[in-house]
Structures are given as structure tokens and as C-alpha cells.
Image 1 (cartoon, rainbow, N blue to C red):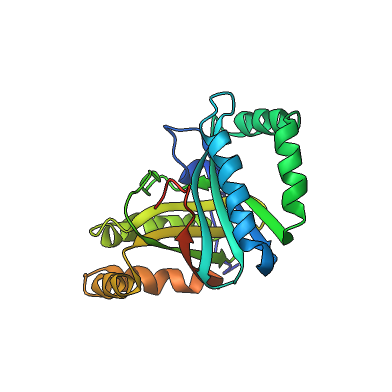
Image 2 (spheres, rainbow, N blue to C red):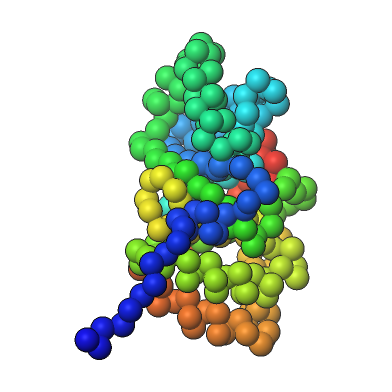
Length: 238
């Protein structure tokens, strides 16, 4: 009789947290490459991704491509955007399966990989849209495995917290999984170098309210991981 009553959720968290004005779907790929093939893999990815990125017949574009510098070694990370959501993804896959050049690329690439996995993502409504960047930057992909059922709470806290992390233009994009590992959040940040990262993160703690956001979001996390990544030559995010 004293049990706490929780109101039933009125909608899926994908509808409550994602952007309403766009129908973009994102795919993130993690490719673990055989060390001796890393250079060849990067060159092959460069050629194929540039072709798909600029081909208007494919409703997809490369947001960014990186090699992991610190974190899991000999790894490539690719982030794709499908303009039009799931129908765009389906159309793109159908066309790729009929593209003999792409099928040959995939066969050649398979010889270079140890393993690969991917996830389909939506972007948080309160994060800025990932747009191309020039210059020489390093990127940090912070991945959080949340406790099931806590995505709405995470979004509510970060909708307020993101303002503390935008002054130096370090916020690139924020995403949550729809297919693949569930209740996973990815935050993508850009810095000039590791020293800039250290100074930017330290400055956030000097802002009133940041400590509160961290205090309330930490208990929601089961596991977290940080990757420091270097952009590939063809990546729109440099």
C-alpha cells in the first residue's frame, strides 16, 4: 500500500528526445582492423566514401570518419547520416546491394577486418547538428551505457547541462541508440589538442550548475568509455 506509483510513459523516448524538425537517422560503425592493413584500409575507405558522399542517388552522407588514437587500438569509426530516416536507409542499402563496385569494395575490406559492429542512432533535440569542421582537431567520443529506463531522465539533465559545454564550440553532436546496443548514449566533442581538452573540461567545473548535472547523471550510468580519435583525410569533420 506504500509502494511508489510511477506514471505510465505517454510516448517512446525516441519521440520525446529526438528532433522533430528533421527525420535524420544516423549509423555509427566500429571497424577493428588488422594492424598490418590499417593504411590500406584508410585509403580504400577514402575512395569509396567520397564517391557515396557526393552521389545524389544515395540519400546518405559521411558525417565523420576517424582512427582511434587512445582507446581501442587499430580501430576505425564512421558516422553516417541518412536524410529521410528508415526509408532512406532501406533505399541506400538496396542500391548498394546492386552496386558491383561497392560489393567488390566490401569483399576486399573483409580481408582487412578482425571484427565490425554498428548501431542506428537518433540525435538529441537539444544538441547542435553535426556540421563539417575545418582545421586540425582531435575528437572525443564518450559512450555511456545507461540503466534501462533512464534515457528520459538523462535527456532532461543534459538538456540543461549542454549550455555549460558550448562556449568553446566543442560540442559536435549527441546521439542515442535505436538498434544495436540499447540505452547507449554517444557524445562527440572536438578539441584543438589534448591540452585544450583538459582546459575546456576544467573550465566546465567552474560554472555554477555543472556539478549538479554530473551529480544527477552519474547514477544513471552502468558503463562509460572514452575514445580520442584522429580524423581521416576525407572526413568532413577535421
